[in-house]
Each structure stands twice: as structure tokens, then as C-alpha cells.
Amino acid sequence: MYHPQSAPLKLFVLVAAFLAILFLAWSPLTAADKVRISYTAPGPQHGLLWLGDTAGVFKKNNLDVEIIYMPGNISAPSLMSGEIQFGQMTGALMSPIRLQGGDPVMLLSVQELLDDRLVVRPNIKSPEELRGKRIAISRFGAASHMRVLNMLPRYGLSEKDVTFLQIGDTPARIIALTGNSVDASSFSPPDHLAAVQAGMKILLNMAELNIFYQGTGLVSTQRYIVKNRDIARRMVKSYVEAIHIVRTNPEITKRAFVKYRKTRDEKQLEDAFQTLREIVKPKPYPNMESFKTIFKDVSERIPAAKSANPREFVDTSFLEELDKSGYIDGLYR
Image 1: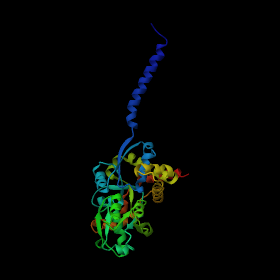
Image 2: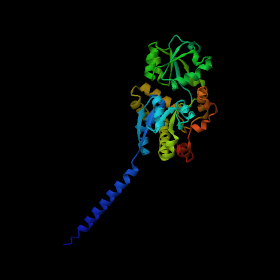
Image 3: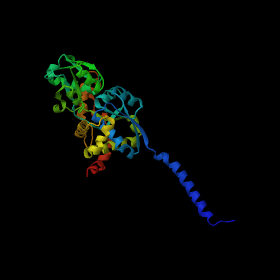
């Protein structure tokens, strides 16, 4: 027997089944792209990455980002092997790889000037008194090493006049310094404050030297970018948006530091926030002069550095797209 009410019911079932099939077919295409990215230290210069996570910026740009802490000597090989797709690392870390045939490129810059504090034991009164002294670094070739190397000649010294000791990350170097195992070390602000509070003193603020030096930036490989341009574009967009948050919303920024620097001390959080805010630019183009300084530093051991073109070490195409479209300026209106 025909039931008039059965027709709408059948139609409803058919529509529901069609929508279910459509959803199953469509959902994989809209799933967030998985990305692995490393950072090399717990310093505030890595805060844009942390903010992309805690403020939901990556998620907003349809990115499922796995953030991994890796020392530089692990991070760089991991990027080149494809184990990670992006890395927050310094120009000093990625440049030697490219100079020797690798294909890392910096997509945007977080830091372009040296701003480390050279912290010493209280008996050292001037940079010239570093002669014959022990200087703690995280490892040879790392930022803590190369930045001091860049500073020494300004005071009539060279690496032959001091002894560099590979101690490890920031906490280990602070312990070595306060324990009199070494005489000096450089720290990115505000990490130097822990050593100062323990009785050490700031001998030099490298920011006052106004040395262009390519610090932390967002780095990938040309191989990955060629095959994944849209992912790279969304990563760069996420960083641009994170910079906007840093420059306009201290509280959200500090929440990222609470999670990744593992502190709730208000002064430490404020110092870290101010450090990051001072170094980031709304339009974070890498500075070519900053790469030239690095080339000069490594030219004796890597001859290719003497004729290197810094523009071959960056890919600003994604940043330029956002800039020319007016997107970046629009964030600040």
C-alpha cells in the first residue's frame, strides 16, 4: 500500500546519504597539512614559532604543525634529510651547508643584528682582558661561538687568543660561568639576566656595535618548496600574523612564553616579550648585509664564501606576495 508520508522520508534518507558521501570525499582534501619544524634554543627569538602554536595561527592557516626542540647540530642535518620540513635557525647555521652544495634557503628573518650580551666573571674589566681566558659556547659553529668570533677583532683579539669550550645550551653555560669553569660566555637577552643575578657582569652589549648578522629566521629547502609552495606560503603568512600579535598584543605573546620557556615569572616574561618585540619587523625580509658578515666569518675555511651572493641564500617570493597584495599593511590599519 502506498503511504504518502513515505516519499519525504525516502527523500530525506537519500539526501542524508548523499551528504555523507560528499563529506567523506571532501574532508581529506581539507585536512590540515602536517608540518614538522624545529627550533634550536629556548630564547625569545624563537617566540614567533611558539606564538603560531599557542595563538592558533597555524591552525587558522590549515597547518598541523609539530614543533620540535633540536640543537643546531641536529636540526640542520634533519632539515637536509627531510626529517623536518622547516627549521628556525640562524644564517650562520644554514649558510655553510649551502656554501658546500646544500639547498637550504631562508624565507624570512626574525633577527638581523647582533644583540647578545657578553657576560663575564667579575674580575674581567675590559674586552682586551679576555686574552688567555676560557669562553663557553654551546658548540663550535653555533651562534654563541660565531658571534664572539665576530666581536674579538674589534678589540685586537683573535680566536687564537682565547680558549673556546663546548659546554652546551644556555643553562649549562650559566652553571659553568658561575662555577668558575669558564670566564665568559655570550647570551641572547633576556637569558643573560640569570647569570647577572648570580653575580656575573655584562662586559659588552653587542647591540651597541650595530653589527648586521643574520640571526634566527625561517628556513626550508628548495626541494621542499618546489613541491609544496602552498604550504610554504601559509607558513610565511602565519609568521607575518604572529609578528602582528607580538606588536599589538603582549598578553597573548606572553602566554606562548609561559608554555615554551616554562616560567610564570612576570619579569622574565616581560623581558622576553620586549626582546622579541624589539627585533622583529612587520615585513621580515632578510638583510643581505647580515649574510655578508657570515660569509666573511667562514671564508677562511669555506673558499666559496668569498664570492657568495647573499640573494641566493633567501627566497622572499612568499613574503613579497603578501607585501604587494597589501595584506601586511592591512594588518596594522
